[in-house]
Length: 290
Image 1 (cartoon, rainbow, N blue to C red):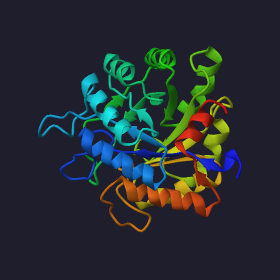
Image 2: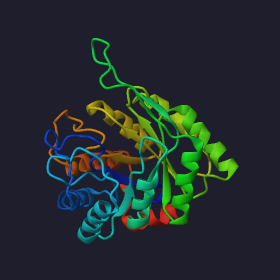
Image 3: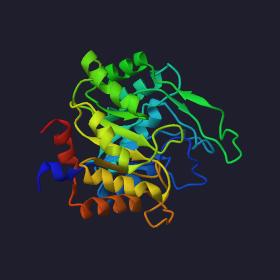
């Protein structure tokens, strides 16, 4: 099997704002470490993590406390030392001191790099807003500051793109010198006001992605309808991500109790199209251009 047949499998463990009282998302360092172990044992080489507040009753809320970030990452590394950590840096507003402090404290191998702005919208059936309309603002100067912080810490950016214009902007970032290899590209699909979760869009997005990227994946948000997109992603040579941040449902429609079964399902899908999950050591080589 050649290196091009290897697929990087990422487990998106918990996301932001999902209520742990309603869904089985891990919050505490112990919970994060245990589910990281289950994801690794099922075939994941990377865990994408959000940090949550640890005070009783506050686990739904994000935290940018470097001590919280360190406790979670230390617990994961103690349980599964070989796993790569991909931490979020997404924050509304221009102040990125929290994400930068957490990056410096935990030194993840990879970090999500939100690469453009999005009006984050959703309506109810009667047309009312599901939440007050908000702008997830990622202007160029904010992106540049985060890229410089990542580069200074040898963190690989995972450029998250919410629409085709953001995908196309990456080539301009590269020509401008803001964005340098190695970096990966993620197509975020399924957000109501972003790109739809459609397998037929993938070839277009791949064609628009910059040539300098070290690989691409689709982040597909929704119910069991996400799985045909994952399969097409695997067929086209993309890498794969799933987890409780993105879906609570297996291809059968069954609701899951944790991240492990989701990773088992996506690894099985990869193998059905002739691809094998990369080990953490192989991922490090792939990201380094080896």
